[in-house]
Length: 248
Image 1 (spheres, rainbow, N blue to C red):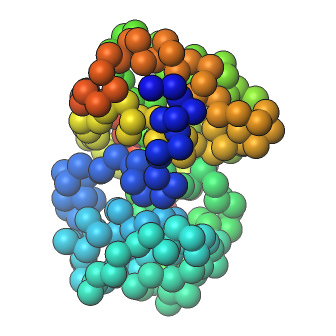
Image 2 (image 1 turned 120 degrees about the vertical axis):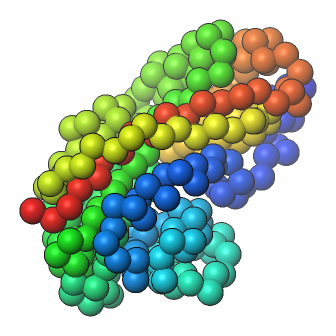
């Protein structure tokens, strides 16, 4: 199938092409907290992490600055969704046991966000931020994905995205850090799903708007040849990078 035909069939929803965080991650986060009354999931998007956190906390306060993203979220009896920015949230002082940010903290104003975190966290509260970079599939496919990310889209990433490149190692983080275990996501996706995920990237959208065609067309034939049957599921490994800490 030509890429133009393929792309016309992709769903427009961001949530359809997101990997799922491992349950062990949320079990670990809960174990770091003395109490489990409330968690603030900031930049919740479609509420993916919030739903998992609801298994361990009495209440999840899930916020996002995007009404469109929140429109994709499913209602849950333990989750309160609010259209609020990371830098100003309607939570009471010292009310929260855990603050989480999944794949979004690099977009925030750090000083203002961390001021809010320190305001709402209990004295023994915990903050955890995490994200992910490129997944790995096979050496041949991986090389094409690196080319797509680093060469084709090189000039189309927002400045803040360098924190993703460095796996959050240089992210400002004014907390007493805890060394977490390693976590990774594992998915079984076909080429349609991989293309949908790559199409959801901000760099992809910026390239398409400026250049006038979808950047995946630059590698699509090679990617299809390397993958084989585009409906064939392949295993994807997504290492998570995380910073976790407590109030100083």
